[in-house]
Length: 243
Image (cartoon, rainbow, N blue to C red; front, side, top):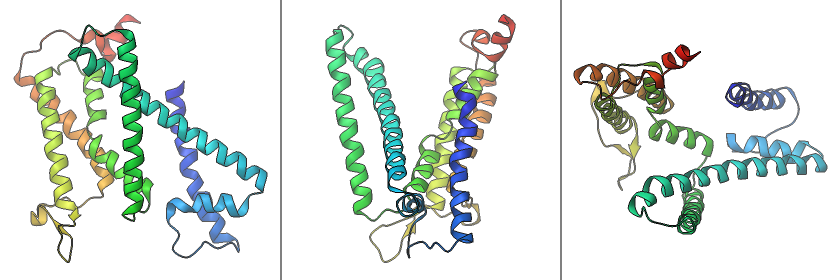
């Protein structure tokens, strides 16, 4: 049920921007000069809503942000303890694992605060757009990986590894040929210029193309290797057979 609600909930959140655009286009209200896209909604809340309702909305926004942050920190702690600490120290007690998880949460939280402060210090703007771009770069291929595992029975580990390598190489190519970096000179420069073969689409599309690259390469490369074991029971087809 939660997964089904993701699409309508995200649609409603995105629709807020459309409503704000209509409001400031059709009323006498004006935005401050130089306001960024991320600041429009907070400015609307502070300038157009009554004090009591403003407090409720701010409390709801802060609680939602805290809910997302604690989930991420818990996830980091779980991965760090289960996937790394337990392997490095298999005889650790439950108390030691708990303390390690607390340390990971603390360090991760401090790192997040530090990165946010650095972003503000260097004059970052439109943080949401930056986050989406980073998601497209660093989470590329994850959907393709899950689709391979859930919808195919021929994919194997070695083919998947080749798909991951192809996804990383594609992401690096697209990023280096489409992004200008500050190298200390008077102008920003691209680290890799392939002329007409440069990646010219929007960076958000990296998060789309990388999934396709991983899926296609991983699936086709799997035909080059023998499967380690039958994984049909773990796929959609196994689930349908059990029903």
